[in-house]
Length: 525
Image 1 (cartoon, rainbow, N blue to C red):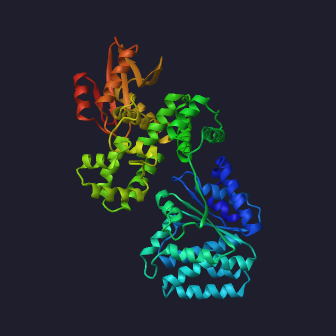
Image 2 (cartoon, one colour):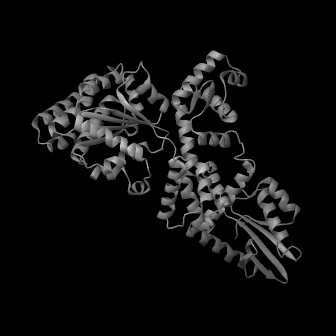
Image 3 (cartoon, rainbow, N blue to C red):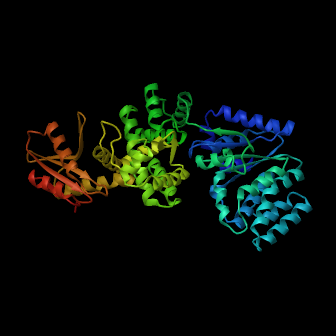
């Protein structure tokens, strides 16, 4: 099982949760194939990162039957025919032999089958002639060739199958689906398991009566978000892996609600909560869960933010009329669900043009239609669009301004808590300030109020606030400093206030500093 461990990482294996029905269905389908010769090809549809591939990987790992199971990911494969066919054939050989060799002839030689070796030798020669139709026909027929040579039936798992449509634009290929169907119909020893994340396109491929593959799939399985029980099980595994006690059920419910039970989102949010706890020694409560969620949704360095940004922008790049489509997406995000007439009124477009644009958008799979309403397929993606593009509140208690302030504060804490460099820099500033003012300085933390450095000289307290982030110190930073002073023991005592900033100050901050007679230090010298 060399190859499965290369694509199915150990940490993914440890966190694999439930999907019992899907695994049982694969088992039943393969049993029918082996014992009765019944071929019921399967298609797994679902949102990106919902776990479609993991179900296949988990079955391949567990499989003990006398059958070849191969896997190819079309997201990682060029759709230029000569490259596609070479990769397709190589993957079939690698999985049949459980070998990592990249050279097709070296792999073929290990079969000890002169006929197949000669066929592949001819195939490599034909690659140079670029007869696309001939090449693709040979590639699609090759699983059956291997099956007969090994006297084993074969299952071909193709991830992100909708990507294969990209071959339609090449010379000699009028319809890649017709070519695939011809191969599929002529085979008896090859079973296909397909996955697809562009659900709208996959439904057309598998379910529309005009499609070449209509009625060729015995079962279409939609992988949905986790149930409450499955979500709790996955969260517990993540916390256990990190050696942290599982939070109470109320916290688990909050994580479930925020992530909407999507496997990938559940995992990211749980890991961010653990990261914040470890960095800052915080208790896992509702406030920490909310902070973790806000960071992932709004911080440009966070995984969830970058994932949504990629999905949104990449989907638009693949569609014509990006500017108009983006305007529609923002309106759908704003209203949650809209009709054609509402969109026409909002964007001043005719009904016919709007219908065309909506059709293109549905092909990207960002939005779907039910009855007369259009809305986002992924509810959390809609929330990200509202936050990033529209500046809408996450909820009634958290404004965008507050979120930016929260992220700003956490950025500074990350610099201090996560790297030795940050700690060394803080110590360097402390010693330089002590030399500059001939005073002994220490950190201050009493009754929940923290100051970076405090010292006393000639009955006057010297109080320093230090911001060593790559961002201008703003009005809110200065106001926060004063708020702490007013709540502290220094409120009515003689004091001098200092603000140290690595990156400087905004104009509003400078006015506030001048008004309140704070001494500012750009960098300690």
